[in-house]
Length: 110
Image: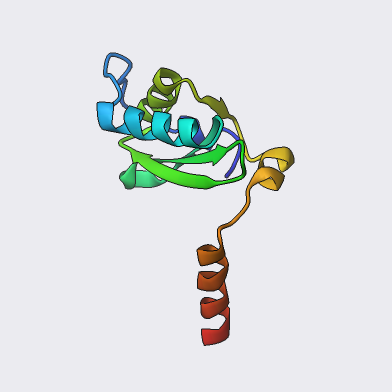
């Protein structure tokens, strides 16, 4: 992710609130993994991807309509947002065995 790409917006949606389901999903992940940090990635027309990294190394993602809504959801859920993928955060991530198997199948299929 390029620095500052999470701020690429044209509409002012500061008055909107994050959907309750999104906030609940973020809170649930953080509670189940001893806390969490988030990185928000702008993904064009789809909106924004919130990648959550738990304190135990587990990770998951959620999608929001845009980066403003994603930041509001994280703030409401009490999850800190990192501005970029820092080395310490990436080192903390532990891919699941299912993900390793999935990546192995893709490599072997080539």
